[in-house]
Length: 336
Image 1: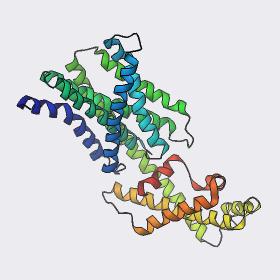
Image 2 (image 1 turned 180 degrees about the vertical axis):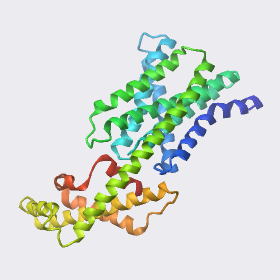
Image 3 (image 1 turned 90 degrees about the vertical axis):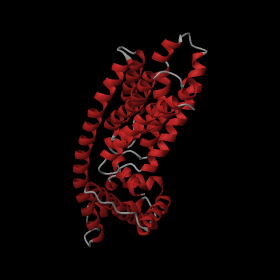
C-alpha cells in the first residue's frame, strides 16, 4: 500500500461522509439517530452488491455497449434498488418530514457510493487523482443526492396519505433516474460536472431543511393543542356526552363491552404518547433532549397489548379520533 493510495482513498471515500455528517448537524430536531444512519448506510452498501449482480446479468443479455448500458440501464437498476430502501422506511413510519427523507435518502446513496468506491480502489486504485476527485466529490455525492431527491419528492406527494398509492413514488424515481443518467452522459467535463454538483446540491438541501423546520414547528403547535384537549376531555366527567364518548357508546352494538373499554384505554394511551413525542420534539427544537424512561416504554407495551385485544377492525373504527396519519405514527416511532 503506497503513499499515493493513502491519498486517493480519503478523496474517494470521505467527501460523501462529510456531506452526510453536515446534514445530520443541520437537523435541529435530531429526527434521525446516528445508529439508524449507520444501518441505512450498511443497507445502501448491500444495494451496491445487489446492483452489481443485476447489472451483470442484464449486461450479458441486452444489446447495449458498456457506455450505453451505463447511461440508460444501470441508472434504472441502481435507483430502483436504492428507492426500495426508502419505500420500506416510509412504510415502516421511519420517515415523517422532509428533513429525515433527505437524510435517509442521502445515507442510502452514501452507503452505495462507499461500497462502489471501495471496489474501485481495489480494482483501479492506480487511477490518477483527477479520477478520484470526480468519484469522491462527484459520483459519490451524486448517488446520495439523487436518492435524497427521490425521498424528498416522495415525502411531499405522500405525507397526507396513510395508504400510499405506489404511483406517487414514480415522479421522484423518474427524477432520480434522469439525473443519474444525465451524470453518466458527462455533458460537460467531469471536473466541471463535479463542481456543479458541489455548488448546486447544498443550497437545495438547505432550502429543504429550512422549509421542513418551519412546517414541523407549525404542525407541533397545532397538534399538541388538539391532543391536549382530547386528553383533558377523556379525563373529564363530560367525556360520555362528547362526540367521542357517544361514538364509543354506539360501538357497544358492534363490539363486546370489554373490547370497548380497551378502546377507551387505547385512545387515552395513544394520545398520551403522542403528547410525549411532541414534547420531546419541542425540547429538541430548543437544544434539549430527554431520554425515554421505563414508564414510557411500559406504555408502549400496553399499547401493543391493546392493539391485539381490539383487533384491526376496532383500530380502523377508532382512526378518526386517533389522528392516525403517517406523521402521527412517525412521531410514536421517534420515542418508541
